[in-house]
Length: 460
RNA sequence: GGCGCGGUGGCAGAAUGGCGAUGUAGAGGACUGCAAAUCCUCGAAUGCCGGUUCGAUUCCGGCCCGUGCCUCCA
Image (cartoon, rainbow, N blue to C red):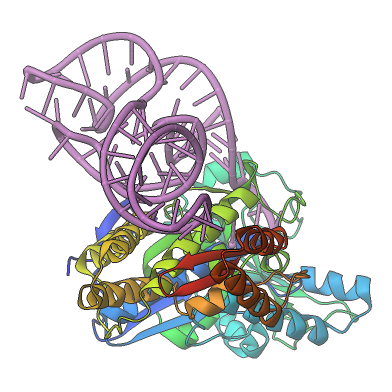
């Protein structure tokens, strides 16, 4: 197996991955703020880092994957105020929906999924350390990180302090010592959730949670930190500042990985632009696996322009893959590891499009193979390759019977009855009648395929 | 303004200092009662201009076009 290389945002280059401890890899990925359904852009890093997680698990004996849930945030507070719902109700419901949506995309759950609200003491301790070491200060109920106090601030995003000031576009709070200082702790009004702290009742700023939870679950320095491109600045930059300054300069993570954006009609998909699709609404129109393939069809660092057409293409591709499995179902596949070509593609900074091309080649070979003993090893390769990328884990029958949420066509049993009637007509050489049945089903979204082993069907 | 990313067949999308994958769409054929699926065959691409080089899509420079970040963001 070839070396694993990773594009490290710190160096803007591909680097050979050298784990801190080859027997135990640590990975942290920023998770959702739970105030609303996940949109497809939120799902991209989850799917991408799930694929990396699967690769790491095959290459190393143990991997700890941590993905947090941000369950305290001003957007959540605002949502609760507007809707009249309790914050806990919103965060728990949204977390559950997130879990359901991500499971539908065939993502494995992380090993640890910490909640911010359960790590307040760790955040307070970290803030205390930063104050004690002279990197943070309290002012008017806030605690702020003093950016000029850190010499190397800006290494990840490659921004100098001067550039930050030049680009400042927000109103600068009067209690800040420096315009680029950011909040570690802020006061809560009586009607806002808050926790007692040495600086009064308040709540954490956005960035401190990840520093505190990463330290708690992965230690001071760990291997890989992932997230979307837009988190590089300010979120990850500030995480680095907090953690390094609290830990005498020790790195937070050795490798920083960032996925590219998802666009819709070439515009960034975002809640503020209101041009987003939620995962949930798309799952009503297409199988989760097709959504996953659409999200993985481009390299993880490149932008992906999502469209309904790209989703349909992904579904058609999976139809072909599952079709190969269905037509060779008689050849029992033993289990096998994914082929080296696929592992090499994934090990080269997660070249998923190339890995998918290898799957196409296996499918073609499987379709060409006539003898069961020839098919069996190819099936094994196909199933293993699919699992490596989070595909092909259901039965072909289940795949082809998938129905959208609005499914109002014939039931499985009705289809079987029609197929039997058509078979009788065919045997009587009553082709007008058999074609009428087939056309009738086709009009209802059911496609029949006559094969050597009988007639199969699928919902299109 | 500062920092950054990208431009490859109709579309999607890899790779590469020398034969430019893969999928899809398209054309033809095999198979089929007819289809569908599958298989076979075929046509089809490196934004523009320079430079380095025996050779550039790849490296360098310029230009054009698109796009992201610069304290809500995956």
